[in-house]
Length: 296
Image (cartoon, rainbow, N blue to C red; front, top):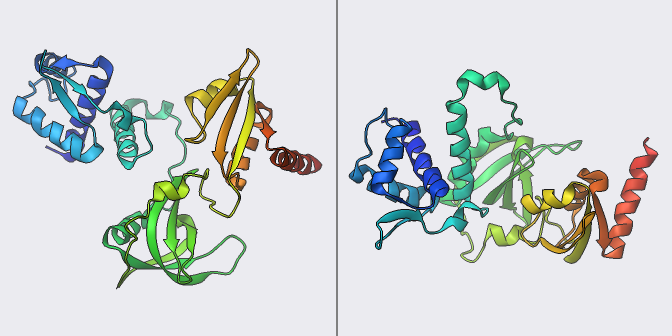
């Protein structure tokens, strides 16, 4: 069986158990045949058990069985809503499966551009996996290019660009956009990854990829018009909390370092977002808007 077919079966099992909460093996098998997952052939229990193990290894999703009624269910639903690589992989494979089944209507599907810099992903991931240093050629916008050897710590996808978080030869953490790389080589020199380093913790106080010395702040914004529901369904940051709500607006707080990435995201929503606190940040936003108006 082709890998794409196997992945399709994994995704079908996960999404079916998400939709129906709990199913006996017989109920799952009936839906399997109704949906023609294996050309109408029944789901063998041995195959299902192998799929359960593979789903756990690949996505971290645990499919348990309630011994009282012998119904199968996903016991750790939270893994499907966090920011883990398993969640991202599951979402990517789900979209891939849907699009593969939709070739006949491809002209009616409007997609965003694919992330740039993917040609370097394989080498970067190999370097991360083996703790090997990378020699990169880098060309910033409107700057001279240079070469540098770095220790790759992590990858982050942000606004359709891949970014490498790496330690440079000055023992400083830096961010490198993969689409600005002119050359990439895997060296034979290794480095020791700190056992207590967590990329998730490193970025936890930031929005985006800029990680400068901007002080941590308790930011309160007022969401107008359509924005309250937008923020409720797609939070900007894991610290987002709803403080108050009226028929006309809702207030949200963030404990975050308000870098240019975060302020740019707020400005992107125009008059749907108003910064209330801290006052110096409100003034900075006002100045940015005033400078923008001068260009018009």
